[in-house]
Image (cartoon, helix red, strand yellow):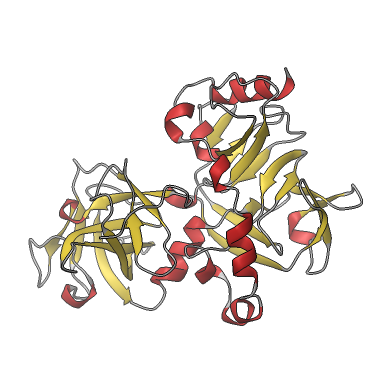
Length: 338
């Protein structure tokens, strides 16, 4: 077990206990989902109709494995969490769904719990054939979930004050940052995924947080709020708020269905930049997200990791419990203007 450092940024994902995904046809009939060495291709799995996703809270360490944090909905706080493999399932209509097998270990290093993190839509009662087991890409897949991303068409404020769609940014372009003025873009990442599950983006409608237009970002993208008055009760003026914690079914909604183009913007340090006129974070490179960088980029920019570690704004993040109210977005908007 690892002692949790509360100063490190936390992350949470929705997972299923392995017991809720069982083999209903094939060599391992009746068995719950296990780790890679126990799995057989072509086995048919089915998610229990009674299955319910649970929130797994974790924190990155200086090296793998990750650490389960206090307040998690599943798992043992302080226990190590390993990324075992990436699985690909195929439904009867030919659609594929990927997911990650996560393994919690005890103090002796033995497997204590297996969990499944779906990376797409996983429907209860549907038969799914296991068609792929990949031990090499689990960390990269997980990193993409953790990366904060803007969507195609999002207007970014440049150093000149001009507004530029994120997909038109190039390495060397200078964007405006809140704390350090103009800073160069060091890398732009892009990937397209199904807008389901952990990848379904969050829409913040125009005006909700004083944004000029609709803002569509990845679920864990953190927005920066400066409170003139602390209506939220956070005890400080500067806040970072995850987009998914503001979902209220009206002014802030999760947009599922189809595909979404995600763009990641890397600067020399973790910065607060401006998207659709409001402050939001750039990509933070840490243990979770580093694997999302292409190999050649990771090698070339490895020296940035200490800068990102020192410039992380994690201490400003508002815990989800404080935002568990339907008017959270409106409270933050008022806090920033009055």
